Image (cartoon, rainbow, N blue to C red; front, side, top):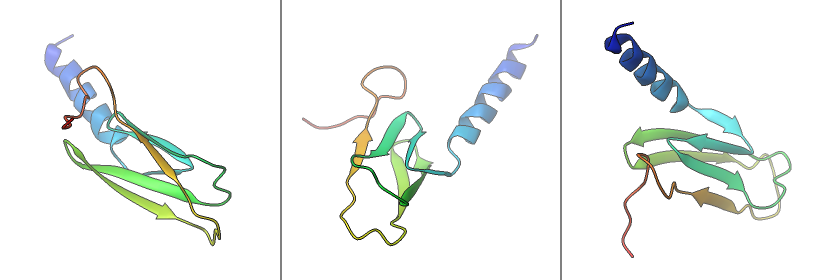
Length: 85
């Protein structure tokens, strides 16, 4: 098969992985997002809006206790996010 076919498939899958995903935990653009404690009915949605930018929305679903969101950035590989120490 032609290399272009594989590139198009890869780009399509990458785009699909960056769409909204609603749950109590998700992974978008290599970044893992989860609630630290049991979130009950609360859900989160995330989408990539740039190479190093995410838009995260949390629906608390009438939770009365504070919600803590854990964000794990990739440590190695092509999806590593730059940061200042």
